[in-house]
Length: 587
Image (spheres, rainbow, N blue to C red):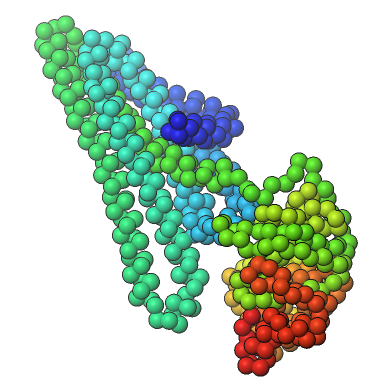
């Protein structure tokens, strides 16, 4: 049953790919007309051999001598024009299909939940969009084109062969069914090996992404030789898989060559004997022989194209593994739109499980509009997981998160996330201008608003120090900026979005003292009038909090103001002592 179900899924995927091809039916129709012209021209060439030999060389017909060269010029002009037309049109169709497939794949990946990105390697996803889609492009623009063109040519040449001598044609075609079985077997082998090759290429892409992004650490720890050895190991594995694919693909041509040779040998023996016996003319024989020789060419190409198709189908399966993936964050059919304004956030008996581990247990919180709530506790206690439930990066396993009394699972995801701004511990910026990074959540913002946000985030002065000011490109992940500068750009971005709910995930933990002071001032501007969740690394940074919640091993163990929690001398007191008494920064 499982095997049958798998076959049905694969068949459906191939149908979807064909439906993409059908969308360009008019250009396909024109391309097929061009292919028909090509097939007719290719078939006319061996057809003309008989009058050339019999009428010109044997009968010395002057009229045919004048007519046939003119006909040959017309045939080859038609052939060249049709070749250009089908090449351009089929590549247009192929490139358009790949563009749409790539867009669908990227769109699907962007729509998948955060948990998907935590489980998948970035390099593997990049490989799906680049390498796998390129393989499908080759299949569509080359294999589909070649198979249609060669099929039309085979039909045309077969017509010529049977017209010239149907008995000899039957013997010449005996070898084709014999060749069919090994070609099919080899095609399956190629598809299996190609899947392994594509997976290996994805791993290699992932490896390159990690080592290039982390090159500073590689150099700092003197691990260049180690990483080279790992890379060489990956390329050796890819090399072995590629050789297996080559071995399987290379066998198809020799098989077709040998079987084609048997057919041609028979044609020479049988046709030659007929000419000697006087039952057939030399022109008929050479015309038949020319058509057979031209026929085996497209037949051999079809056997090679089968390998390309199998590679493309393997890539199709890998792409549709992503396209068919269901998100576990499901929006209701008629969701409630959250209106802009101050919001009250309630966690009611919330449990959250990540994989098989229960991360949050029976969380109950009521955060009032405009309240600043600080979350503290040991690393890995569940603080980040808790705030990640608010924008529905994950869904609760049990219980509910409510905004203004409405379960967020009943709201539209877009309206929910419009209410939330976020500043994370690791500043995430894009290789674009400072202006566009600040306006990332508000693309229609005016220049005055962008500058006002930069000033409120204490970033305006350092931005003005750049020659291109707000139009300065900041490099990949903001590599041209310092840690404090990057964080202030992130704060300006959150300010410009002007969302009523704010999430600060250890936003100052990785900064030096001077940068932290500036960022802390910027954060104070950002938090004004917003319902704010602050994940605190340094307890010295949460003096402004209206309430502090201590989370240990997924549970709320203490709750209150700083002085109240200190007087209890329990978990918060221990954290405070570990930082201020021993001068340690461990939370």
